[in-house]
Amino acid sequence: MEQKINHWKQRIDAVSQAIVVICDDLDGRALNRRPSPDSWSVAQILEHLITINQSYFPMLDKIVLGEYRLPLHGRLPFLRRFFGRFVLKGVHPDRRRRMKTFPIWEPSQSDLPADMVDRFLKHQAKLKSRMEDAAPLLESNVTIHSPASRMIVYPLNDAFEIIVTHEERHLEQIKDVLDILEVNHPAPGK
Image (cartoon, rainbow, N blue to C red; front, side, top):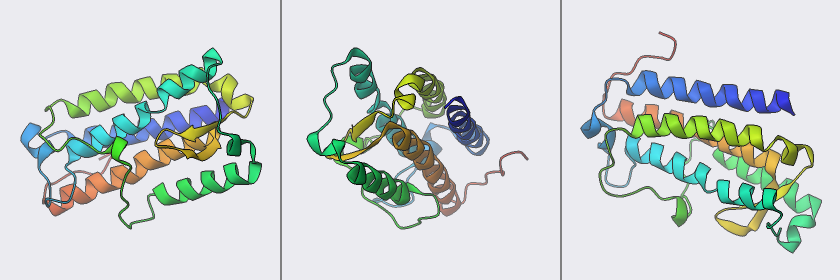
């Protein structure tokens, strides 16, 4: 399990480093600039990632305290596998079709603070810590429901894979936004 957690942490670090590189020269105005009225700004994408990732934290706390109640259908292995694979496929970076997010994960429509990159990086450190703390839960094959809907159930292991893959998808979205806005951004590692 430690190897899997370390792999997720490495991928989170790669997303964080890429965000630092491509957003390094962006001020608050540039972070909040939207390519179109129906598109998100870089700041909104970062806020969305923070919001969605943090929405799992209260559930993790309840599991540790023994207060979490899995929906009855969550005990059905085929449903857990189905939803885990379905959601993971939907957030994969190669899947370029736009998807509508659940309302609880919608970003703010107003301008966000200029320090959104710093907020995101602090969140990333917290996310990695929460993954480390969840090692015993992963080893006991805990199943959870999506914070957006109790109907969607999947193993915690899949939840973390979904979170990390979702971040990678939105990193590609940020690059696309900056390309549309014609903001020069270097490739990570250059």
